[in-house]
Length: 406
Image (cartoon, rainbow, N blue to C red; front, side):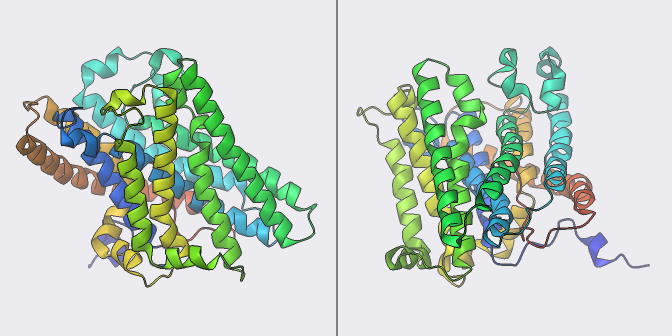
């Protein structure tokens, strides 16, 4: 008997709808995180080397891309409901689906990490916190426990619950407003408050020397999520005939210029306020906030053309090619497993800072990671996601289910 097409597929079909380009962005962000960790592991990132300037901010920038995308994709259906004065999507189902998207794949990768690093794994206390992704909030475990990338997953989960609360408050407040314009303005006010609050929190924590909580708690990242939510608001309201300023729309319709601006912001992070180079220049509060702002703005500029610009433009066509789209589908596995593979390689390789070492370590890490990500996606993530999709679906459900931040 021949297997059905569904059984033959190792990965779900890439999304082909309006926001299909985000699959490509997700793949690029996951690969960027992999490249970032390989560059550090092989000693390429040094304050006195060009690679240090090029790679040292790549990880934070890719996390910003993930968080902005999460803000957009998860708030988009809620924003549409608020716009149309309809009930919000079922919030209980939303939380269940998101947790099923996060935990099963994470637990599998955590087991892989424990097998590769058994001594480290058995020496960590509060294993329940690592297992439940609460380690960022347990002081003895900060800053790195379990999988080193898991701190972003803790923030993602905190955002899911925060988003339900924020959207519920906005929905209730919107019922008192008579016009669509007033509901639109209310959301802009709320998102502005979230962004300002995040920057105030980051500034105050950094100034007081509490650097670890500042970079491991969701409060410092509400501005990145708010930028994605802003794109969702603009997308939902332009869908009903509202128009962006002509200059802004023209820029978004020619996304290559947005990419140029995003790259400029990224290079701007490498340029120091005080004329120094290297990671140490971000030890100051001003430097840290400067880098944080630049990363969020660059990520927003990168994504905006895909959700607000012309669907036939070069950037969108590039990000929807089949290879990137397929990697985007398994990007969560790439994000989780590459550190496990890299740890295994580090136990067997010489770290010498040479580009040749960086090249082969990156190549091997990528190849093995893709295989493990395919297995994780097919046998763990897809079944869990399908389980989460059972039951009635809201008519405004987002067309593409975002993978967790990387």
